[in-house]
Length: 345
Ligand code: SF4
Image: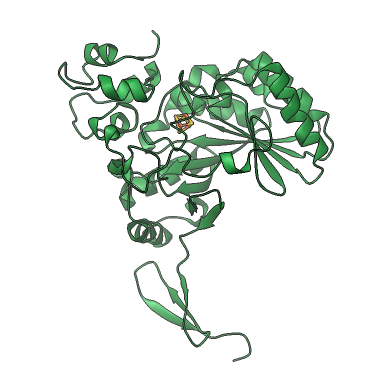
C-alpha cells in the first residue's frame, strides 16, 4: 500500500467527505498520508488528533495578516543554496524538500512538496559542503528539509562521507518524521548510513501525540540507538492535538520510555493557513508550567519560539520574572509566586 496523496484517495479511505471542497487546498499544499499514519487514524472520531495533523482542512485557505511564507526567516540567512547559517556554530543543510507526510501545520509548507524547492543537485550539494568546509566555526550540521530520511541510504551515506572529511564538524543532527510515519525505512542499512567515523550523530524525532509512538516506531528507535545514534525529541504545540497537560505529559513520558530525550516543544509558527492550530503563548506557558509539577525532570522539553524574521529561537517557557527592584519573582508550577533575593542580599 502506498501513501494517500489526493483528495480522491482521502475520500475513498473515508477520511473526508466527497463534497469537502478540499481541491483548492490540495492545489496549494501537498498531501501525503503514509499507511503507518492511516492505521493510527480513527475515522469515526471527528476530532482525532492524528487526523488533524495530516488530513487537509478548509481552514488552510484562510491566511491572516501576520502569517508569512517564510515564518522563521530561513531565506534571510541562506548564503548558498541548501544552507541556512543563522548561528555561528551550526548550519542547516536542506538537501531535500520532500517529506513522507505533509503536516498541515508545517512551518516550511511553502517550500516542501512536489511544488516546493526540490532536491539539491550534485553541484549544489558540493557547493553547500564547500561552504561548511570553508567555515571553521561550524561545529554542527543539521540535516532538515523536507525530511532528510526520505533520501536513500546510499545518498545519505554520500552526504555523511563528505561531512566526515571536514575535521571541524563534530556533530551531525537529523530532524525527521520518518521513524514515526514510515518506520519500515529504519533498518540496518539506514542506521549505518546515518553514522560516520569521527562524528557524533543525533536524530531529533518529530512526534506530537503519544499515539504516534507505536511499537513499530520503537523497533526503529531501538535500531538507531543500538547503531550509536543519540535520540532527542521535537514536537509542535498544536491546538486540538496536544494542547492539554495530560496529552503533553503522555507524549513526553512516551519519549523518555523510548529512550528519546525531550528537547524542543515549538510554539507554532506563523505559517500561512495554520491559524486553526495556533495556541497563545500564555496558554503554552501554563501548559509547560503544569508539566513541571506533574512529570519527572527527565520529561521536560524546552518551550521555544522561532522569532519571526530569522532572529532565532527564544526560550519562552521561563517561569522566572524580574521585578522592578532587581528581585526575582519565581513562579512555581501551581501558579504560586516566590521572591528570590538578588546576589549580595
Ligand atoms: S515532516 Fe517536517 S518539513 Fe515535512 S511537512 Fe512535516 S513538519 Fe514540514
